Length: 83
Image 1 (cartoon, rainbow, N blue to C red):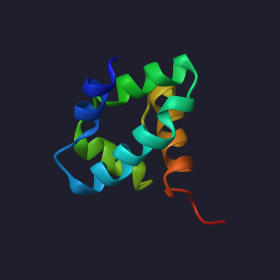
Image 2: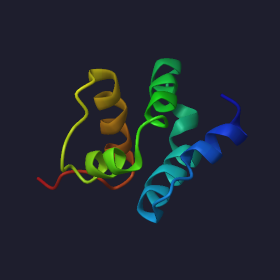
Image 3: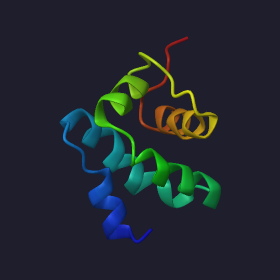
Image 4: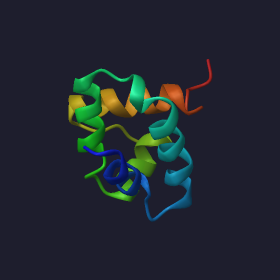
């Protein structure tokens, strides 16, 4: 996907999601393997309330492909679970 479309796809209706997705797009996305970039594109088609629940660890996506990219986002945006 072109960068401009990714930026606007990463801008969501919730400020909390913008604060997670926009830094991820800027800092981590360029370093991802192509398969993970494609998972991110798929993630952008999901509903905001699902994304918020996943990033806040209230639930996990059932789709293992989405779970992988959600975990990458969590691990790279301060959304880690405390040990």
